[in-house]
Length: 169
Image (cartoon, rainbow, N blue to C red; front, side, top):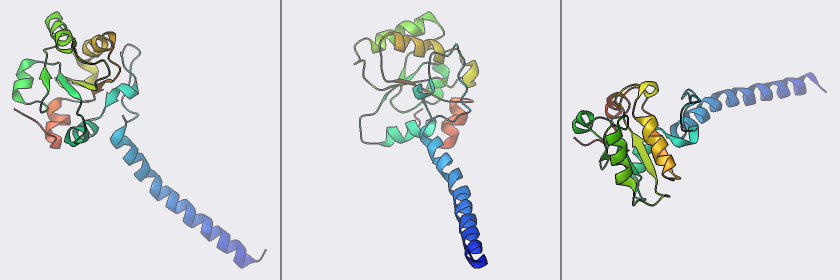
């Protein structure tokens, strides 16, 4: 093989490698818009898997879509719901107390078990939220197959409102 041919092959390999390096980050960024990022840690005690988590940007897009919208349920504190909530979200009360769980069950008793449901709280950091885990566990125990939890890493205000997503006061 001539030296020129070897140089052409090396140059071609460098160009292809450079293109791959430039394209990969964009692919990863696009993937994270629709699926939970790997940094969403799931503890052994959490009642969900990564497929049960919906990201704020994904839910916001679904709510703008003309298709059937998910049933969104706020399972946090009334004061936070009154300040701001996702449009058409149903308030059932804090799932950390029995009254909230009873209201959640009553709200869902006649709902088709295949309905897309999204639960959210946003009172505090995701890892510390006292409401999201008991609510999700209850909904799964009731037999809902398409229940998801909205991943709000910090709070509803930071991870939803401040990003300009739809809200109602």
